[in-house]
Image (tube, rainbow, N blue to C red; front, side, top):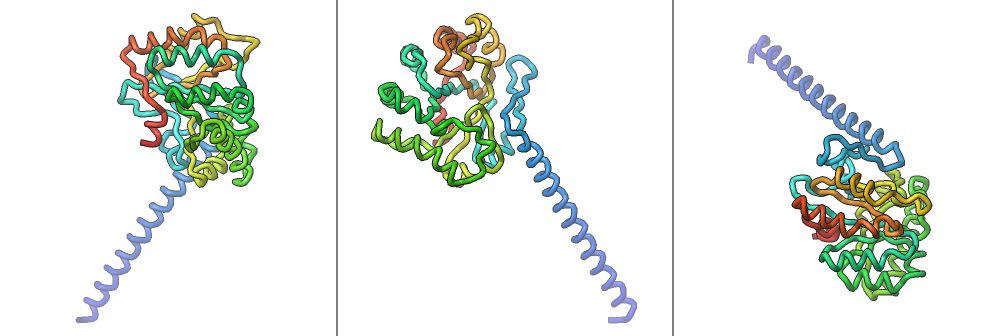
Length: 271
C-alpha cells in the first residue's frame, strides 16, 4: 500500500474511533440524565397525585415506568375500564363488617392492607376477609414513616411480623404485597422491599377519609370520587371511615353504571 493510502486509511480509522467515542459519551449522558431525573423524582418522600381532565388518569409524582424499576405500582392498565378497590386499616373501628357485607353482595373482591395491631385485635375479621376471597396484604407491623427506614433488616422485621400473624390466623401465606403507611417512602426501602420479593402498591385515587373526627359528608365524598374515577384506578379507602361504610354500596353501583368492572389486585400483580 502506498504511503498516501496508508495516511488515508489511518485517518478513516481515527474518524471511526472518534465517532464511536462520541456515541459512547452521548449514551452515558442519556443514562446519567435518566438516573438524575429518577433520583430527583424519588427525592420526595410523600406519594402524591396530580389530577387533570375529569375521568383521565392522574400523574403520580413518580411515573409508573420509574416505579416499575423497583417492583412498585400505582395504577393499572389505563386502556381497560377496570378498577381495583383497596382498604387501609390500622385498627378496627366498627365498619369492616358492613364493608365486607357490601362487597359480598356485589361480588367485588378487595385488598385490605393491615397492620399487626389489626391482626391482634380483630382476627375473626382477618379470617373472614381471607375466607371470602379478598386479599390481605402488608401495611407493616407498627405503621412507621418508611422514608426514615433505611435498614433492610428493619424493613424485614416490620413485614415479617404481619406475615407471621396472618399465618397464625388463617393457616395461609400472605402475598408479598406491601403499602407504605401514609404513602411515605424512599428509594432505599423500595429497593429493599423488591429484594425481599415484595411489590409496593401505591394508589391513583384517594380522598381525605382518614380523620374520624372530621368525616366527609357522604354526598361530597361520592361526588369527589365519581369525578376522579378513571380506567385502571387503584382506589385507596380507609375501612375505619364511617363515610366509606355509608357510601360504598352507592359507589359500587355508580361505578358499575359507568361501565367499570372490578379487578383483583392479586390477579393484577401475581398472575
